[in-house]
Length: 99
Length: 496
Ligand code: SF4
Ligand code: SF4
Image 1 (cartoon, rainbow over the protein chains, first blue to last red):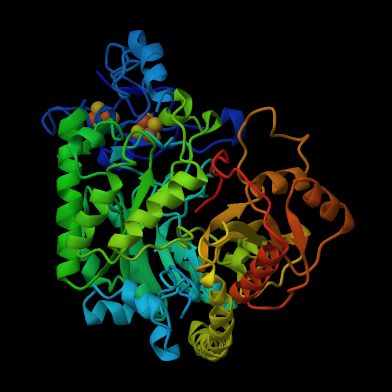
Image 2: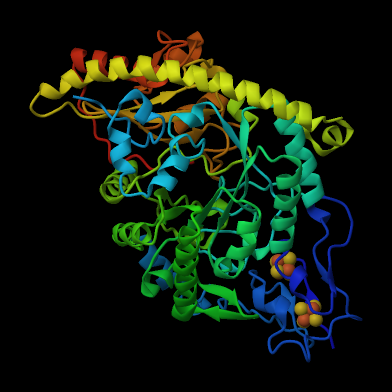
């Protein structure tokens, strides 16, 4: 099984140096909308088994939804990183705007 | 009675001006010595020297609600700007090329685009090569502080001149509203616990650096309703742990930047709120208002845009004899020092003259003014060429530096911005709240439009020292009678 990075990746580089299996890479490619983003080499990814309790890439990635686990599910679903679940978003926005 | 220029932390002992030495009075002698003539910390020296920023550190180990990772660290640079990431080797080549061509470039900072200490290999490799190849360049680094305690030893190996730590809070309750998570000991930690760890590491790192005699500056981002009332306490705490400067910067949050705060409609402080807080914190310790946040501006400071001269291809092709360059740099810098000394003496006289206004019981209200300069501490730039204005506040007690405002970099992403907006419109927007703009020359059309916007253009003080000219213009305005003006509604739009 392997983790996967999808196109919402913003190329922040945070995950790349942390991977114990050196599975993360930035493919060369065109700039612009077809820009390449970081990828995980499925043959190398160990899901951090034996190295860390938490898969490192998903642990540091700042973008919700950018990393999928071996089952194809987002490891950081919407709301998990901002700390504000989608259901409470409107309420939180009103609170913040009142500041 | 003297008129101190607030934030001016330089050269005052030699010219006998007392204000700024008082501001630094709490510092131990060896630190005071370092600060006095430092291009980053002296309000006056920064007109003459430039600092450059090498974008070698992409990764970050925390999330701030005012940051969007698509862009450079929001705290350390202009929002919405992406630096071209360089490898340490590329960065060193570029730095040597700029330093060889622009002798005023004296300080090299690593501040991002992420957190330099979350990229220790890249950051330290750059520092290692530079300490070897260009020992005359001062090195500095900015960090969120999380990884700092563990890296203090290594930092000290490279003779780091100063460190900037961004500290927005000392209370985890406040922190939890600013930092949703950190990455710590190989796992993501969220909420209050995250803020607790971050705060502990920041304060510990600050103490360790001060104990080793490294200059530490603290930056705080002022976020209304979140930490605005808390920052006075932060100021006291960081001073107690040895920080020599506390720089309060405004939150800049716009939806177009895609940050959490921007998208959620968190507002930034108004000019007034920011200045009031800066004043309060100034009571506690030296405040710096001129900090350019280590932007990649070594080139811009000289007024002509020479960024295009130092692209990677061009730098690759350059032959650099750094030993010869170092010689030339030393000469140019000596000439700058002589020139500064002369200006200092001259400026002192005007300040005394202006202070006579103080005899009035309730002084006239302060006025914000903008200056177009290409460096050297004098008004020497054509209005139409200025891509950045220095903003000052003149009052009956002093002329003080408030911040920088860029004319073209603050794209809001809204209707007001885009192809349709002319350069002049953008400039007018950048100058909001100012009542005068001083420049070397100005065209007829912008003159008219500025007047219509209530900003008096003034080209009469070309080639004069900035503070002196501002004092004279303010005195004139006061003599004519200042119009009533509501100042509070102006949103902050400076790069501080
Ligand atoms: S899960 Fe672990 S091994 Fe797999 S790519 Fe991410 S960091 Fe590397
Ligand atoms: S941490 Fe996430 S956003 Fe950053 S490069 Fe890796 S996958 Fe992309």
